Image (cartoon, rainbow, N blue to C red; front, side, top):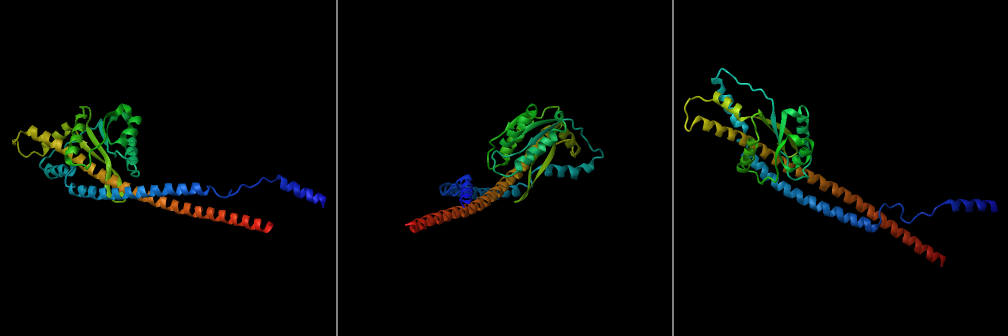
Length: 303
């Protein structure tokens, strides 16, 4: 019996005491503080979702109103009139100015990373064949580090809501960076399909020289008022400005819709996390009450 008692005592002496509430990852105070933090985050994301939804409706309406403006109007002119000419022009593309359009702000899903990924994929095929004109803070932060020698200019803090005037101003800056060795301008942006779908699109624009050469093909008459050169230059300005305006409208609508979806998902995840924390809080509180009751009953029994 003594040996058995010794063994028993030896076994018990090898055990370390279990700390109270060791099964709980957090104590009540920590859980309560975390629940408060998650609840505050959910309120913020819900508010941001409502703001994004309001802006998205306005951006989509602007996109609908401006869908008749853009490169298609010039392309339709070419398609309707070039049948008068037997000769069709083709141009050799040696160097391209790439214009990726991203947002200035984050928290809008993966639309910016999609543009950056597409731009990197194109440039890495042949770095010597491209230059970059960046639009938006997010593209500047990512592509300036990757291709510093290709960067010509960057524009950030774009005025909102977007309109044809400020789009034309940016388009004019793009044209100033089109040097003689650049044969083409490629605008990369997010095309708005619907609230849950945005796709990366690339639109290629001619440089001024090639555009004027193509424009001559669709000129029916030798004389025009005002001068033909003025009309050609004006049409090229309009050609680039409308294409860029259409791209900006699509990108802004894509940004706000993607931000609305991102904030909706964030609110949903915060709600699920809050439910789990509430359940954990109730479990810990119940365990604490049970242990305290056991201690009271044990103390009363001992007395």
